[in-house]
Image 1 (tube, rainbow, N blue to C red):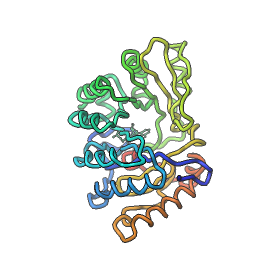
Image 2: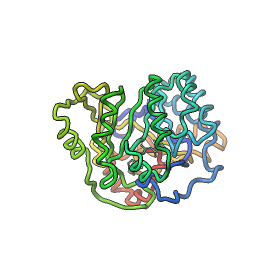
Image 3: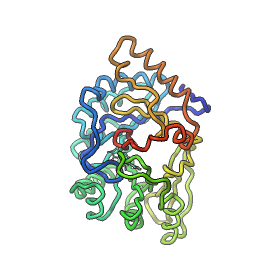
Image 4: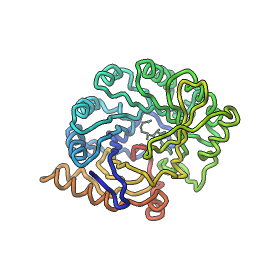
Amino acid sequence: MLIDNHNRTINYLRLAVTDRCNLRCNYCMPAEGINFAKNDKLLTIEELKTLSGILVGQGIDKIRITGGEPFVRKDLMELLRYLAKLDGLKDISATTNATLIGPYIDELKSLGIKNINVSLDAINKATFERITRRDQYDTVHNNLIRLISEGFNVRINFIALDGQNTQDILPILELAKHYPVSVRFLEEMPFNGGSKTFQKIAWDYKKILEHIREAHPDFYKLESPSTSTSINYKIPGHMGTFGVIPSFSRTFCGTCNRLRVSATGDVITCLYAKPSANLRDIMRSENAKSNVEEQILIAVGSRAKTGFEAQEKYRDVFSNSMTSIGG
Ligand code: SAM
């Protein structure tokens, strides 16, 4: 088991398989993108398999595949086939913009990978195109509905962006009325590759909840796992649920069970912290297993207690883009 220096069990790995993305969401990166890593700096699929095996051996039992956009990586399914058979791994999930997932839906289902988070920040096509700077709304919408109809456990992640998409909060909630999905509203974080900086946000989780309450005064709170980052609710009569994720307010750090590894092998113990180590060269050298294990133990043993503590220590962390960190 991995236990951190604040006595929290770390069993959840967010594994980024690429830093590249086919969308250019304006709150994530500049229009021209960021300095994407060279191919030889990205972990290969073999390295991702080996690394996953080592970390599962250390106590990780849940892996979420992220990116960049994970499905831009043509060899992704090879990794997923391996993970599906990995002893000790109980839960495999993916976070995607749902532009490229279509051809893989059947195989994902047959591998038993059913938990898919779809990032969708607008239900209005023009708003979607303005935010993503790409014309992919119909594909995303079709894939989303297909995933739901095929029985995947789908959660929609919607970042509340002041002046951009908050008029879509109530309309996108209608999806939870008609479908068994969870629509989660997240606070914006300043990880946008330097496009803009901010110290506070207009749409924090409290304001999002107040806005929803005006239209749906009778929603009620649901029980959630203690390590959940989302606070979950149900509107009577809706098939699905909704949630808020205080990712900027950081109310959930006390029970954080996560570790992140970026596509280039950086070990990140908190979104608001700088990497604690890089595993790529270690993976490519002798004694990879024991050296990786050692670096993971050091990283887990020196985690910031909260995102605020991490931010205090690493003041320039906000120049990062979420596409390199994995979200
Ligand atoms: N491409 C995949 C996707 O779209 O879900 C996975 C990677 S993406 C970086 C992961 C998540 O990070 C997405 O839900 C995205 O909306 C979120 N994200 C990116 N930049 C963010 C920011 N500045 N603040 C909050 N969330 C952000």
